[in-house]
Length: 110
Image (cartoon, helix red, strand yellow):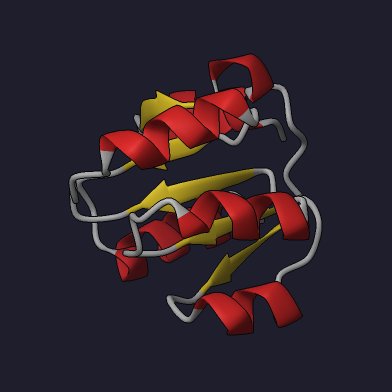
């Protein structure tokens, strides 16, 4: 499945990274501790986090994740969106909480 397909299936809002919506998805990682994500997320994973500062872009690039999903309609800093766009990092937003998003992803066999 691609990020583009995921957006359609879950009704996610695209905040950044429109040029990378064809990234392939191969799993999911839920965590808010950046150093832990760097050590454990796998390339191609979706990353669900409440973190919104620009450091999430660097972590996404280091881990080569497919996209970041921000739950609960949390606002994302403009600097973060700018850096994500500059580096082709997809940031999506959902009104749902991380638990609900993870359940939706599981139902899609992700």
